[in-house]
Picture 1 (spheres, rainbow, N blue to C red):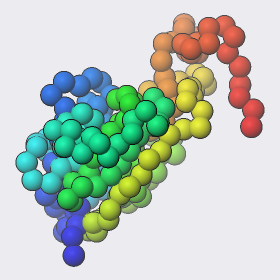
Picture 2: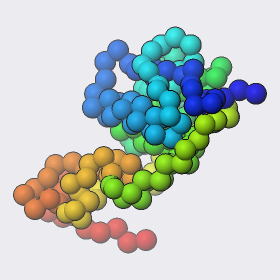
Picture 3: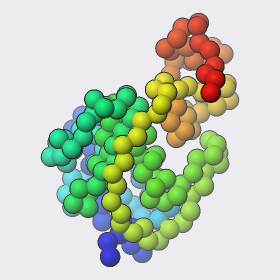
Picture 4: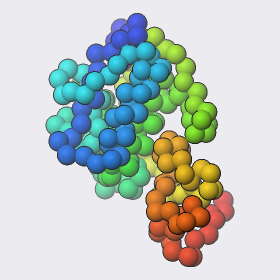
Length: 185
């Protein structure tokens, strides 16, 4: 049987693009943090052996024809396995970050309830499973405007909503100017 984590150890590394921005940097940090918290193991950066590929890496380039990035919006992502490697990609780095949170939920059962309330089960063994996920939000631009939540940028990302430019009161008007309204469903 194959495992992502076996007896609190992993053979996986995080593969990063040659050039990347703050969202892929955060995605890598979150993988490191939650592999340690959930499985008690360190996951390092590297391109050899089994990898979790984030964004436009050599592994992504090898399988690029398998992804239709034009099919998804700017917050969408793919998570797919190839030869025991995991590729997470999206049209934007934000999509890649959202894909990492999806992977953490699927691998470990991690749940993000609030900025200071995260359910992280301790798991010594995570069996291997294939991933073939294509996901995108139905509403592309989603923002938290509650002042207390709006200041918790990482929590907003974990909920897969945006935190962008802040006015002095902590509200966001990045996309809509002063014509912002609530969405009703």
